[in-house]
Length: 264
Image (spheres, rainbow, N blue to C red):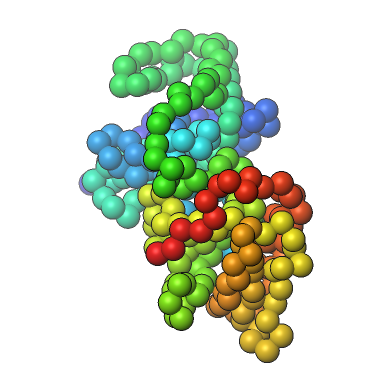
């Protein structure tokens, strides 16, 4: 038997503004989830894992409760939502990630079923919802993890690299370049907590390609420690060196009291 739906499509009666910009809701979307957490309905990963490609700009970041961003996720129908909640490889449709979201419910639309924090209600038209960051409470954490979370902002570059550690061997890690910091994780499917981080030098000339090994580049930390890094291809080595230099030039001032490198 076929299952059909006569539910109105959201794009017919709902406008959504992402950081002040009107965007289009996909025509096959029947429901929206607006979250600031990486889980929903008892732990379901609705946003899904984010795949970074260092060759192209990163559009979306991993969902996190402390990055100041709100995720807007589309649901195609009730079956789609059920699949998300019962499967580890079905996810919602990523629509946007923003600091401020405005929903405008049009005057000629029917009543809109809504739910906020588990409480359902029927919203009559017209209506406007505005969702944004309110405040953040300070918490005490150990110095060991004082720099363990990447700060807000756009990812400058991301991908897998091999880096020399304290021992003379290369280790494969997933790296994210953000605000003149290199954060690294065991793999791409991480929980948002880096395995370690590297605070980069203030001198962009200390970041340079290896003339003999085209896949390699060299970098220096804030405290002067040198690392050799291996990329999958020579093109990616060029992208990383350019991205790191641009990040250094964009964030020239560093705090010398911060811890520099965590090794693992």
